[in-house]
Length: 252
Image (tube, rainbow, N blue to C red):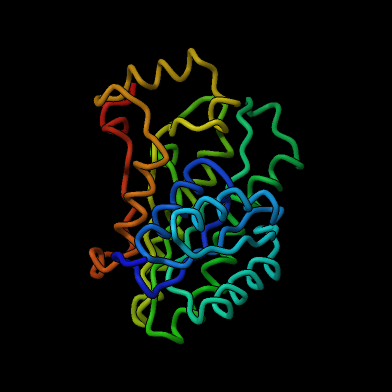
């Protein structure tokens, strides 16, 4: 397949569904070979099959992204399979909305592991692999929750704020070796996973507060990732791109 990412390869975490799947499919449509990563390899098979059916190239990899060795191994395997690694999308997240008083150590560890540690381990492992072929692009999925105060979302807001901060630090450190690091901060994205944890009333409230009067879609976020992954953004690094229909400018 030809496109803006022809001859490149990418690894997308949490890519079995939602915006991770949409991102993997769009990158593949642009000619990128994609490693589709989720906790269990068979969870990723549907995404891989869809990419292949459309004429793209993809492989499913099972890995616990919060495990440093497992994620590093997945990145090395991707480079070995496709001959290079050009793009890493740190998308995986595990989330629970609950009051501050209800937070447990187990919830804390899971959210920090998947939402924060995995991003650190991914950047750490991907950067030297990307350097072998002249550099690459790392895109972290943050959230407008990093910018707003949202009740019953202390850990989520904290984790996503940390992702925004480490994005800037990594960009400052890795720019000299050709590795760009950016983040995307979506508002609520209309996915099956979000609908499972956010009530219909809350969803409508977020639509009402968004100037564009709709929720984001997985494709909205995937297109932003594509921009940061390809040469269109070759002089862009250290940025947190808000993709939220204007919500962060008008939230109340």
